[in-house]
Image (cartoon, rainbow, N blue to C red; front, side, top):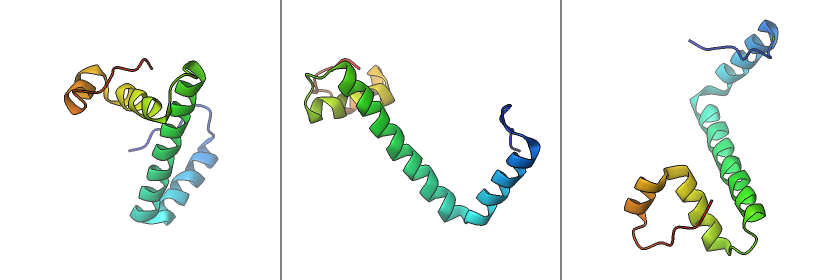
Length: 85
């Protein structure tokens, strides 16, 4: 079951679903991976804007912390500084 976004016409939604079907599983996985990478880069760009003093490693850790949440981040990176996001 799929849920059509409210700002999308029935015809446009049908065309989008058909395009996804034609992509096949590997094509859809490629799109998902690309979107995930782009989201990470956008998140890091926002962190850089809010914290221009952060170096690349601090930005990377702040993004990971934002994605994982404090509890999981602390378990995964117990010795990492807690950079503000």
